[in-house]
Image 1 (cartoon, rainbow, N blue to C red):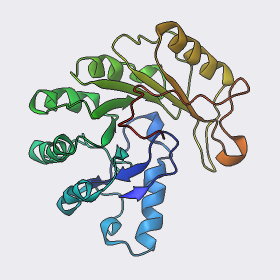
Image 2: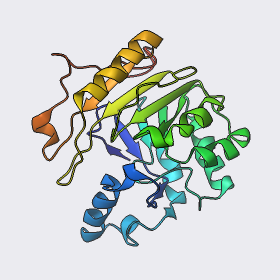
Image 3: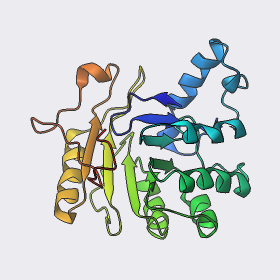
Image 4: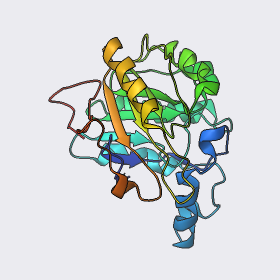
Length: 242
């Protein structure tokens, strides 16, 4: 576990590491770049680079946290990667089920694997499940997510690579939007962001604007319409604000 600079969470927890490129949003994967740095620093967990690996020893970590945490699960991987055994996903879910004081945010690009395994998983209220959608070529991920019986279902529209004018937000409880960051970042049109914000407002879905991105994401910031948008799907004393 490590403290996270990601605006919509507090901590990261990686029961698996590594992944494979799937669609356009993966082209400049930040996790792959970070893995190279961590491998160069000699961290054993990343000794095999971006090859998919499971790390059973990490399953004990959430039991040691003394205070409630908002946790992004697998910031360096995908919990529904094609190579992950169902029993290991179930082990991860068992940890999350047994630590209800923490809020877990699980994000995947593999809606097909998610829906295949969902009937065998226990989506307790502290588990938020989301899919990444970078453009209109992968909208089917939202339809698959909608079929999952989770307390909170969310979308991460990052890196946003094109307009999403007709989002069906039925059954969706939260939307995150962000531009790509890094030296080769692809541009995000402000009109795309505003269109999504208006759709969220119309559908009464909380909207979180993460960043404009670009070569220097700190410089470009995260101001939209003269303000920040930090809406969350649940406001509770039991969930620390991120």
